[in-house]
Amino acid sequence: MRVALYLRVSTKEQTENYSLDNQLEKLESYCKAKDWTIYDTYKDGGFSGASTDRPDLKRLLSDIQNIDAVVVYKLDRLSRSQRDTLELIEEHFLKNEVNFVSVTESLDTSTPMGRAMIGIMSAFAQLERELIAERMRDGQIKRAQSGYAAMGGNYNPAGFKRIDGELVTDESEKEHIQEVFRLYAKYHSIAKVQQELKLKGHAVWRHRRYNDMLRNPLYNGKVTYASKVYEGNHEKIIDDELFNEVQRLLRRHRGRNFQKAKESLFSGMITCSCCGEKYVVYQSSHKAKDGIRIYRYYMCKARRFPAEYPRKCNNKNWRIEKLEEIIRTELQLLTVEKEKITDKEKKTDYTQLINNVNNRIERVVGLYADGNIDKEMLDEKIEGYNKEKDVLLKRKFDQEQELEDITPIDIEDYVIDLKKADFATKRAIIDKLVSQIYINNEDVTIEWNF
Image (cartoon, rainbow, N blue to C red; front, side, top):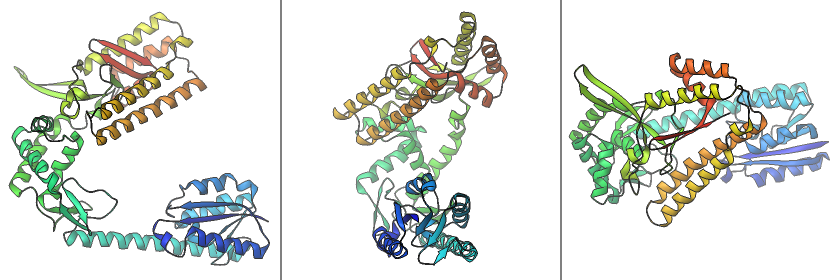
């Protein structure tokens, strides 16, 4: 009988008796005693049994037609979830006439009693996992109630270091954080805070990092867990008066630019041709005779947050309504130019777009090599460019597989919907038609998906 050996350990269990080597030794001995032939060995090291998203488990399922039985050291090596255990055994193994054997529990699905015992044992495996999770939650709550920050990962919050499970003030960042709170209380603007820090010679962090920091009660001597706030044992970097004033200002200014990306048709699609950065949405208000008027723009990120970059970008800002009108106009022109837009020349040149992204990666690496940006910004930029490249590669593949025909009638309907439909419908149309938008001051270049 050809059998597959499946082994799994989570990170904790690698120091216990469930190590991969120990499991393999016992399984090989068991198969030798049974005179079974080992087809292959599948190992998932460092993967939790709470999920079936494991590389070698997937490989095992893809090879299921080539084996007669799956052998594990213990039932919870397959899964700690009762539902997942039963699904794997019943829907994948038994349906393909593949038996399941657990050496430690002497379970064998080739017998009715073995199948019944599988259900019972998997229930206890799930119970154990849920009890462990409950104990961990209780431990974290007690820790927070005792004034200690929740543990997890290697992340040290700005201004602190973790030493023996406690938060200790990082004196090299303490003054920076205090200055951030004082400047925000004075200027009411994170962008202005960044500019002032840059003028004073401080290293400037990202806008999002400052936004999270200003809202975090950790700097006011508190710890949080499960949305509840407790008094902490660590140093209070920001006093109550300043922290409360900053929270009041943040609440007052929240509505101005909050959730604009969700309301922006071209969010993530617009690239600055001058510096290669993405355009973001910016909102401003002005007094008028008839009240307060709100204006919303697309603005290059290197212009919106100049302190985060070696130099400010001066590419043009575009009113949202104006850019939408240009898209509709371009679509109307397409209906006049062609009866049917399926010509090869209308295909997007994804190879060139991918090369453009590679060029931007080279430029940002050059900035890092010249000392104009730090390692954190380099990593963030490259991660963003790689995500953009992944999207382009997928679109290139989709285009090569099949080019959808779009008729003039389709385009006329899209133009009408872009004027009258709700936001979700408009966004779906833009995703279907537009690949990328490039802005170079007065020039707008549209890369279509067809």
